[in-house]
Image 1 (cartoon, rainbow, N blue to C red):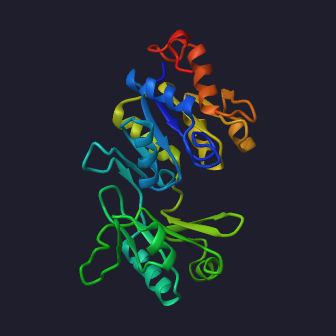
Image 2: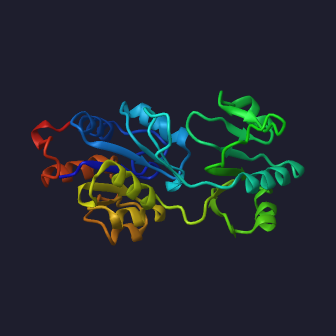
Image 3: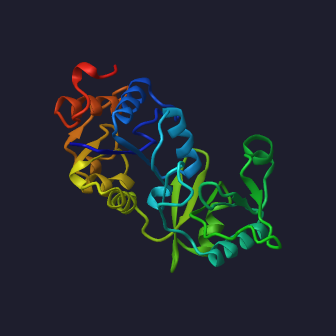
Length: 278
């Protein structure tokens, strides 16, 4: 029987506008109330994942920063983390400030998000309470960052030229969009599967009791490891190889489709088809 569901966000749980869908939200909430652990597993930051968890109306562990971080908002300590050394982060921040490039450093839940400066757009539209400026005198960069984030247009190439795609204690992951690019600087070889394995070991949950849902290349190893693997039909072909079920292409709510299939297969001892929420 499934005891834990690890669910990707973008392209899986969230719609193209990054919103939750009604049917899957209701089903996940019902399963959570019945005692199933719902662990969001995302490449996004801890605070984005936490916002989605709160919108779902559930609590429990979160896998964020592409597997570099596991935390539970109910606890005061981190469950699992892999990070970038402060010395490396400080070097990048210094270079970025000299080149008028804004960086943000995520330190973890209940900790500030450190910026070298706020550009005009961030200052007027995106500033949050936990966003603070780097203050070397106050030593507020006192925890190894989980991730260093950069987005822009002309800033990306010089940053890559300076630091390369990989160093001894970090690697760069580049995401391209229509009008800009993003760089995530994280610890080398982070992956959702490592965080999921650690979490399950901590909770004494075997892989046969884990279901994972995902659509991207960063979900493949998580799907391969989990006892029940669900690939999103509109995702990358690599996710379909280890999948026990592939949702139909173009589904308006693929996670709801997947959950209905698993319920019909009897994978949840606490929820029947008659009890399901549509």
